[in-house]
Image (cartoon, rainbow, N blue to C red; front, side):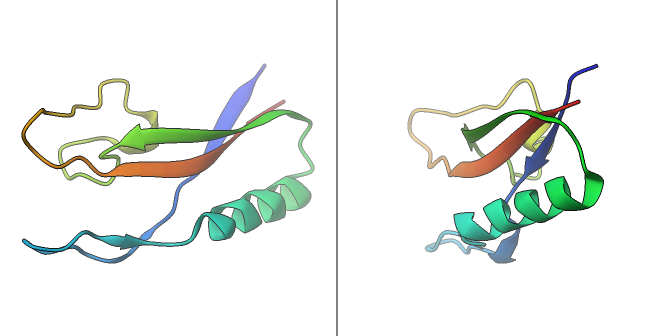
Length: 87
């Protein structure tokens, strides 16, 4: 059975009305993925970089949400993360 696990950057500083949130560096996600692969001893099928909008928004369900919204006149925050497909 193929499964996937996402390594999403955590928000380290919330944004305000005039500022965007600050997230962990992408390298941190990659480091966590490498550590997890080593610890869990899984068979890796594929590793990919995924970019999705607004995954940290309180109205969204994170990286596995199947319906992420963006709207024309509002700001969308796009997040890059690591997805590991494994058996």
